[in-house]
Amino acid sequence: MKIDVITIFPQYLAPLRLSLVGKAIENQKLSLDVHDLRDHTTDLHRTVDDTPYGGGPGMVMMPEPWGATLDELLNNDSILIIPTPSGVKFDQEMAEQLASKPHLVFACGRYEGIDARVAQYYEKKVTVLEVSIGDYVLAGGEVAAIVMIEAIARLIPGVLGNWDSAVNDSFAETEHGRLLEGPVYTKPAVWRGLGVPEVLLSGNHAEIAKWQIAQAKQRTAIRRPDLTGE
Ligand code: 6GU
Image 1: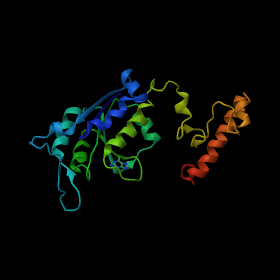
Image 2 (image 1 turned 120 degrees about the horizontal axis):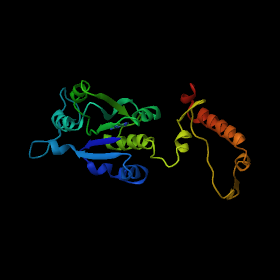
Image 3 (image 1 turned 30 degrees about the vertical axis):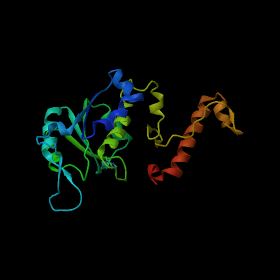
Image 4 (image 1 turned 90 degrees about the horizontal axis):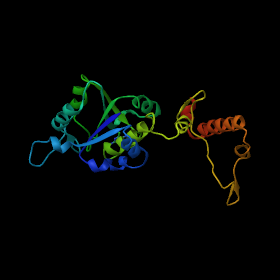
C-alpha cells in the first residue's frame, strides 16, 4: 500500500516512522510520503488560509494549494481521506476495508477546515471520505491521520508478526459480533498477592476460549452497551 499525507506540519507525522508502522515501511509493506502543503503556494508568505465567506470566527484553508497538491498525487485508484470532526465516524470496519486499498491520500486541514469545494471537486474523480475519529475536536487533522494510518497499517497482510492478535482484537468481527477484548495476564502467576484466573493455567484450550468469550461479552455489556445492540 501507498499512503500520501498532505499537511502544513510534515514533522507532525514523524512518529509513523517508529515501531510497527515504521517497520512496515522498512519492510516495504507500506510506502509513506508526507508533503508540505506550503510547497504548492505561490505568494511570498506561503499563505494557505483566508477569512470565511459568510463571516464567523477563524480561518478556512484556501482551495488552490490543495488543488495543486492533489492534482499531482491522485490517480484513478486513489482514495482521498479528509480528517474532520464533521466527518463520518472511523471504526475498525472502515480500517479493514481501507487496508486492502492500493493508495490512500490524507488531506490534513487546520483552522476551521478546508474550503468545501475541494471535496466537491475531487468526488468527481475519486472516492472521497470525510472522516472523524471520535466526538471531540482536535486542533488539526494530523493526529487523526496518525490514528487512522496506524489502525489501517497493522491490518495489511504481513505487518503484524502474529496475525492472531488482529483476530482477537477489540472490535474484531467474530461469530458473537464485535466485542471488546477481555483481560490479559502474563507471569508471574501471583503478583502482589493477586493471582491469575485458574482456567488460564489449566491448559484446557476449549475452556480457555469459552472463558475469554464470556469475559469479552461481560466487559462489552458494561463498558460499551452500544456495541451489543443495547
Ligand atoms: Cl478527523 N479532525 C479534527 N480536527 N478533529 C477531530 C477529528 C478529526 N476527529 C475527531 N476530532
